[in-house]
Length: 331
Image 1 (spheres, rainbow, N blue to C red):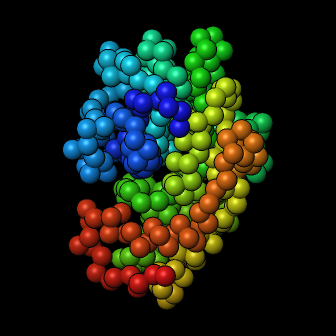
Image 2: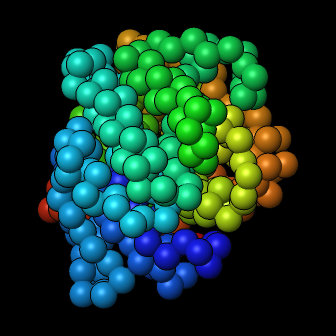
């Protein structure tokens, strides 16, 4: 990380990915200011830092420009993780999703420009590709299949415009399917979290569709590393960069791997209707990330899942009482 970067803003810093970024930035001796409205994030994700003089938490809504501008003042860099991240939620309420994901991002870009922020790193998504042929490179056509995906493309384009017109170094990182500790369980959870929750309950994982659809599952620690590499590199264009592993895993194989790891071998996956707005195949071509950032993902899916399951008490700490059947000790 450049020595010139001392005050770093993390929007959505009490959330899943954002809180891991906060941990890493603080560990490197820098000041962190978190902006989070706690609509999806949890204060306990960053609670261990509350007495750290280098950490500040501000509960705020990124749709409120005056508030955002005041917070961003004197910041050196911004990691923009705050977003409505659920495809399902975006289908239910596209206007709210647009307000947070597009208008909120525009507010942050404007505030960054006014405050002469050195670097703006934006969390985009592989959802922008839709059904583009897999593996997807950054040159693959974008074909959004949900309001969520539309908002991510729009925000990426704002990053590009602010770079070209105003010189703001704004870098979109297109995350593929991120998993890891602190990923909360709820109506909009990712498939890994849902599968784990059911297995811990002694229930079979439920697959939407035939299970042959594929995803590129990337551990949150690799996502954090990619963000830090983007912060360190200078002169990056505002072209999007895929962040994944380059390995496709079918949902059926994921379910069976989790069944094997948890020792719930008597359970067999159940099948339900495909999800509206879902895509068939998704896998990252990470050539640009390797070339531009020096990015090299370290955590295999099995290794990451074993670690996640060993941390399951943290993942499900708010709902432990429902888990009557303990997991075996994992190696």
